[in-house]
Length: 253
DNA sequence: ATGTCCGTAACCTACGGA
Image (cartoon, rainbow, N blue to C red; front, side, top):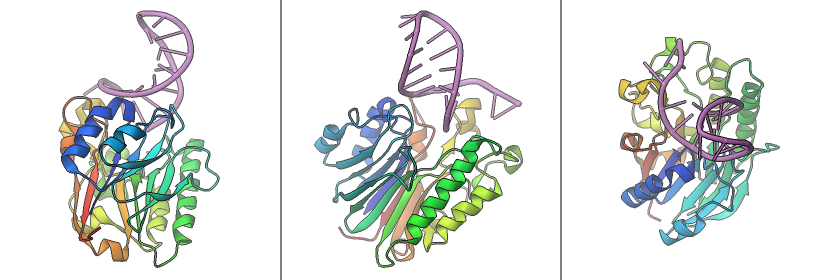
């Protein structure tokens, strides 16, 4: 089984690249963030023609999350707690409870959006803490948080900024403390960035952050074979500023 | 330390958000 998460920064702008990527990598499930579409615009039929069912929670100009699956897609859940923005969607695929998450950016430590980010992470923790212990769960998305300094190209350059502050890191550790494993970090202690700013030639200078994660319950994590960041997807014409994170599992569907 | 890209509204450029 192969599962990927990818913040595409507009599915409209990224459509041909997303399509090509799926054909080349053949994920069983793809968790998408920032579709920036409403449901009417989402390419349900095109995904179906490629062999995938899809579930989308869109709001138009901003946000928007989706799950596409070729191994079942049931019990779709849209939204998290009392949040009014389209940042969270869940579905059951092949007996795995899957979630695609787009955590609020936070903008700046003194911005109200940062408090919204912390509150959102609290709701995510509560949802995961309330799950049934026997239910395999796989959560992926853009968390807009670098968990440790190993996930930051230059910690000094980001001092005092969002994505690296202690309260949001603690909030993400609280999510993980519900018996989840950070799959990317479980396979390597090397830096493995997933996002590079479009500005300043950040990608070719190596100025990246690891802010996209795949998280799974301990039993599912034990089945992991590989976890990789597809840096190729950050290159070339009109890339997203995020690269996909791809995990394979010893799990026959 | 802010050099790009996205969608939108309204035009052929500026803006908010990331």
